[in-house]
Amino acid sequence: MITMRRAPELWHRLDVTLRDLLLGVLLLAGSLLPVLHSYGTRIGDLPNRPFDALAVVAVALECLPLAVRRRWPVVCLALVSLGFAADQLRGYHSLAGTALPIALLSVGSHLERRRRATALLFSAAYVPLAIALSRFGSGETWDGFLTFYLALAFAWGIGAWLRSTRAMEAERRRRVAEDTRVAERTRIARELHDVVTHHVTAMVVQVEAARYLTAAPERLDQTLAAVTDTGRRAITDLRHLLDLLNPDHGGAARTSPVGGLDTLVEQTRRSGQPVEFTEEGTPAESSGSADLVAYRVVQEALTNALKYAHGSRTSVRVRHGEGEITVKVSTEGSGRRAGFPAGSGRGLAGLRERVDVLGGEFSADSETGGGFTVRARIPAASTS
View (cartoon, rainbow, N blue to C red):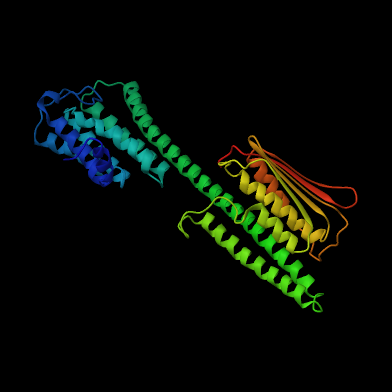
């Protein structure tokens, strides 16, 4: 047994032609009821005529073409108009005349091409109908004919408005989808930049140092082991990134970085960067995106320290406060440049945007003596 809840769903599953045919059949049945004869649309003042075989044909011609009102709206309007003309000229004045404004609304709503030509053609066809009604003895004035024409034009206008509204909604959805794709591509680019740049920078620095350790096999072995470990961490982080981008990849994706800040700082130290790390407070159980953004801020700052002040003392301070995370990474300017080309600034710009999205504050300033400091205040209440 079909429940009332499922009835609308089943109705919308039906083909539109079948649904519109049902509308036409119901209108046809109502028009043939004797009690409703001569109570329909009336244009002109011709005397009422009893229903006969021709009346049934006229009513059917008005109602049944509604089945194709969405697929072939012009065909529907042409057939309905012929039935309406016969209905009025013969004086049946049936309820089926209601099909004419429905057909006009459908043309305005569903016709995609040659809309102006169609409007002019059917407007011109209205003139012979008015003349014929007048010659058949209609007492309707030209003002009355004009008023009826404006009512029909109003039905067309409602359909045109529905069509434009539907088109604007489709365009809005297209733009939202496009903006979503752009935002997703931007997010992917930022994540790849953060993950790849940091690990590759660490590996380059470690390999560069290994060139000067050929006379110390133990230290060389430690450095090469650090390079291997960094490469493995890069692969792990990239897999984790794939999990974040594709929920079907490898099960449920985690929302926090692999290894955490301790691992990140230790990896930087093994690359030859002296890092002092201080973490205050207790991380919140649910901080939304704040943990990941704080991690990325530290990661980008340490990457820049390796690139442009290798060997300089670097201080990392992370404080978990009530409702926010504050990060400060300071690097002295006494180190040496690791030979990397000048950066594009994309990493810091991406961090600024991330922090701004969460409603926080971000700054990256040069210090006296060539050092630089990165600061961030990240609200921890967002779940974006």
